[in-house]
Image (cartoon, rainbow, N blue to C red):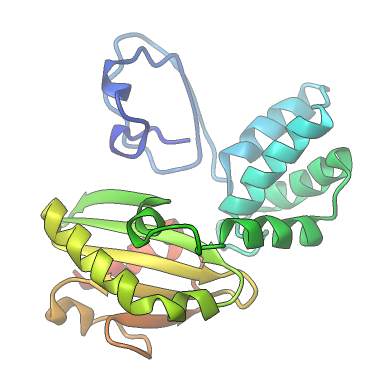
Length: 232
C-alpha cells in the first residue's frame, strides 16, 4: 500500500521487496532487482486486489470480500472521498454482494466500532493513522481519525491538543496535525500544533484555538496536503 519507505512498515529497507501494489504517489527507493509495480489512480489498494480477482475470473470467499470491502470503505470514507473512482464504486457493489452486506449499514457499523475512543489514550489516537513528511524544507506529520459525530472529540479536545503539542516537540517537527473526520457530515476538524504564523494562513473557521472546521474535506492525500504545502 506504500511504495515510499518512509510510509511503509518498519524494517522495509532491510527487506527484499518483490512486488508493489499501491495507489499513492511514486517515491520508491532503488530496488536491488527488477520488480513488478502496479500503481493505479484508485481510492484504495484493496480495489486493485479486488479488480485482479474480478478480471481474472476468480471470486474471493465471503470473508475475503468482506476484508477487501472494509479496506475500500475505510480508504474512501464510505465512497465519499474525492479519491473515489467509478471503479471503486463498482468493486464495492461487487464485493458487498459476495460478502452479503449492505454497504451503508456495514460501513457505518465499521466506522462506529473504530471510532470508540474511550479505551484509547490520546497518544494512541494520534498514532493510529499518522504519516510523516519532509516537504518544502519542513518536517511535519498528519494523522487522521474517522468518527461518527464529534461529541467524543470535543470531550477530549484539550487533551488531544496537549498530546499533539508534546508529540511534535518530542519528534522535533515543525508542525503536527490531526484530521478528525466525521463520516456522517463529510466534515473534518483539523487540530494543528505549529507556528502561529502558519496557522493564521489556514483559511477555515477556527471554533477553538488550533482547531479548524473543514467542511467537505475528507482526503489527506488529495485535499489537505495540497493546502498545507501551498501555505507553508
